[in-house]
Image 1 (tube, rainbow, N blue to C red):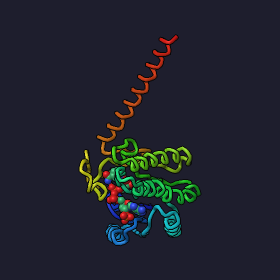
Image 2: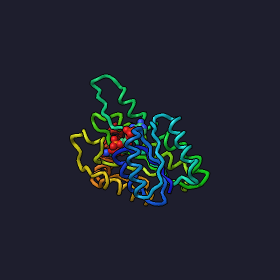
Image 3: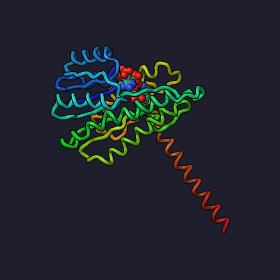
Image 4: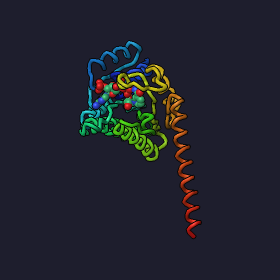
Length: 252
Ligand SMILES: NC(=O)c1ccc[n+]([C@@H]2O[C@H](COP(=O)([O-])OP(=O)(O)OC[C@H]3O[C@@H](n4cnc5c(N)ncnc54)[C@H](OP(=O)(O)O)[C@@H]3O)[C@@H](O)[C@H]2O)c1
């Protein structure tokens, strides 16, 4: 398979790269930190994969497109694109400065568009392909302090839904929604319920991608929390509707 992975220099992207590092696979590994990327690429080569690295900032449309065009020139078909690169900083509203929030939105939303969209003409031409967007449980729940992050991940969920409805069914779209996973992003976080190890998370992600799941929320505890949240929202909407009906009947 020919696979393009962003955010491959650490955490989830690094371990997903190892999962796909086998003979016959050609991996394009992307991130900004060149040295980290090269050392991960070397490990993947030792495991049998052919690897090309791209030191690129996904929020930069032109350099991301250049990397994609270069990778496409080396391969005949593109099988899988994983838009994983992301930032997870808090809003720090008390500082009155939206710079970090803007950066989070730029990398997590515009970066995903810059990564996926340039591949679509090729996927449409070959009439196959698989795109994977890394969202989060924050694609469903907006935590206190993480408004921009949740906004970015809600947006990623919207993109995945819309693209799935727009693209032909020969192109698969998967939204990956991890809970807490050990990584540089979660290192400074104090409260990390149901946290799982990076290698385990990578195995689960690859398994979900192999099954061409539309959405994969993990670990299972978060799947239940999000389901319950949906059920409670529906119950509250139904109760509000019934009360409105009663009020209207009383007013007659
Ligand atoms: N860990 C969790 O608990 C968790 C939970 C839910 C969702 N996620 C999502 O999973 C994805 C991976 O996160 P992680 O936990 O593995 O964190 P991580 O270890 O901090 O990895 C983030 C990756 O994104 C890359 N990146 C950041 N900004 C970039 C940019 N402007 N251009 C290109 N690459 C960039 C980083 O590489 P460079 O710094 O070298 O560019 C790094 O490879 C993110 O989308 C994150 O939101 C993580």
